[in-house]
Image 1 (cartoon, one colour):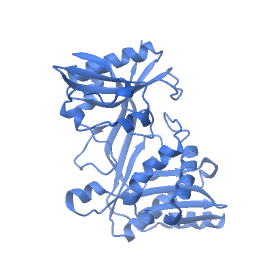
Image 2 (tube, one colour):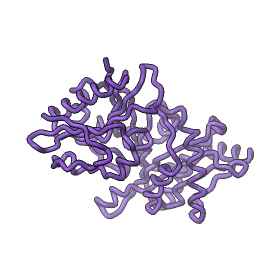
Image 3 (cartoon, rainbow, N blue to C red):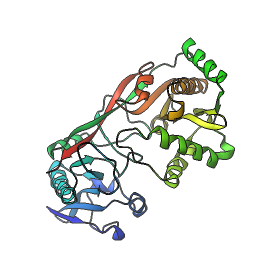
Image 4 (cartoon, rainbow, N blue to C red):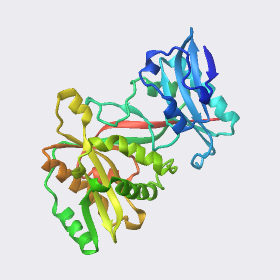
Length: 331
């Protein structure tokens, strides 16, 4: 097994790739945007059989010491993965890192985590997808589960409860206004969502800020697929205080030609407005909006085990999929 570094200014590498890599391509544009500190390939018999990018600069502070990230991960088999991840661990150790974390593409704003408990439901739109053996790859290389996430399913959307109605009335009496996305002012709306997101997620596990250009680019990719009635905002004094972003399950559409499922992708409330019930009202109202559009099921997607969204979700649904982020202590 040969391991070598791919110069980032010469990406993509010309080495032939195993299907496990070529089926999940990384473009030169993605590499430039994500700006890893290095990229590694494991090559066997002239074919790249495992890959990963590494980051070690400007990462979040962690109590166990300096972090190094392993992302853009793909591997054909456990032997290739172990060789690659062991080599990556040595590189990160040489850069002064104390803990390797992966898979994570440089920040939690991008792709990260692995599905660890799949269940019997098919994947949904925007969900991480990985071969079932990949968590075993990380464990075989000395990684253990560092953080846990779930997605929950609401099988049937109940009518708005009296508790939610009372909370909404209380908030509206305090000057809050709930409304849908203004499709005529998308740039302004996305700027507001960006500001709320930066503040709301600042306390999240492994948080690091993102530039507004990348944030808007991420949402611009999916906005054409979004029904504005499924993006609800809470305003106070003319400023966005919180929002919920939901969209239909387009993978279900691709499989069956239709969907009965809405995915609640993001729920965010600015810390200055937290604790007043805005998140609960937004969640319930987007579910009611989905019901009004003929959708009957809701997925609360990719919630960290300690997030407020988990507590809200438990009122409605049950976890059906689990995910994990992995770490390895470095010597």
